[in-house]
Image 1 (cartoon, rainbow, N blue to C red):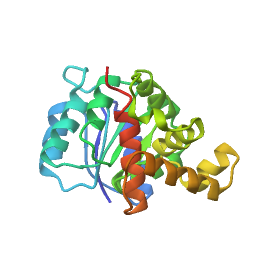
Image 2 (image 1 turned 135 degrees about the vertical axis):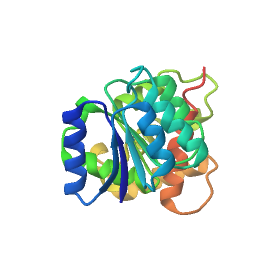
Image 3 (image 1 turned 180 degrees about the horizontal axis):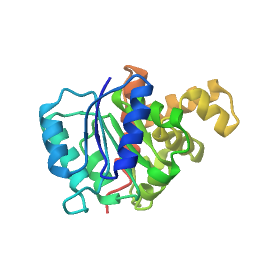
Length: 218
């Protein structure tokens, strides 16, 4: 699996390269600035991009802007944002195209190598990997006319855990219910959101995107 990595801090960039390589990834480009990231995303054959939001030369939104431009050029290009902060506006824009392959993790909340590597793989496969704090921040602007208001509190809990990338087994463990109960809640969620029968992974991604997109409009 080919990765483009963008991180301006040398030690962190090298550490991530070593970690990814040790878990079977091929880092085709490891860059430290916005212009370098733009070139790498345009020129390299990649399966997923892992990018910081703030890169030189401006240290504002170079990384995210490069990722957004790349997804416009290559719809659905998997992007995992690895940031120090929740940049709500850019997270909303990243989710706005309605495609999968999206992740947003906070650097100081990634607690283990396996967790991070699994998130990269999930995003590369078209899924989602959202830090719970990012989900909470995005849901803070929920509208009164939210089309998701028909979901029950338990269904919202299930969907929030889907957004984090949890499997049915993991959701069941977190909520202390059976996997069959999670399956029933999931089926109800898909039905209420009008998501037709298809590949289950795709339905989960569509439900998560509807959940997050439906909550971030002013």
